[in-house]
Image (tube, rainbow, N blue to C red; front, side):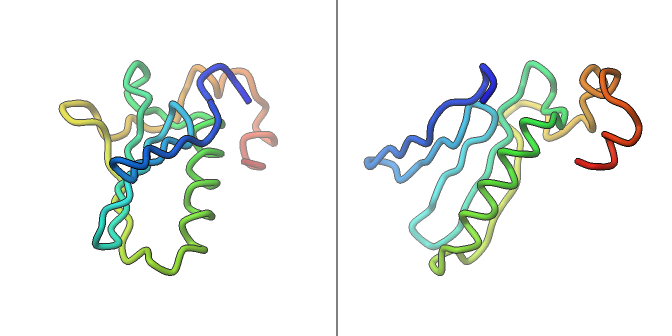
Length: 100
């Protein structure tokens, strides 16, 4: 787990779950799930950690029969998504990039 990640935390008052600091998952009463990318300082560029967190969240939500829809969004007033994290990509080989 890198420094941006933390353990799963559920806030009983709002039904919000924070999987990591990189994504926020909010469970609405109607079965709608809002997954917010939370890597504003990097314009929500996809890093290996962000991809891992999204995969874990989606797999957990897939097992929940009360989920009716999932909305993927960026933070209010911020960017939705800037593409791949080029700073991270320069440190991996082409073959490693295809593995992820």
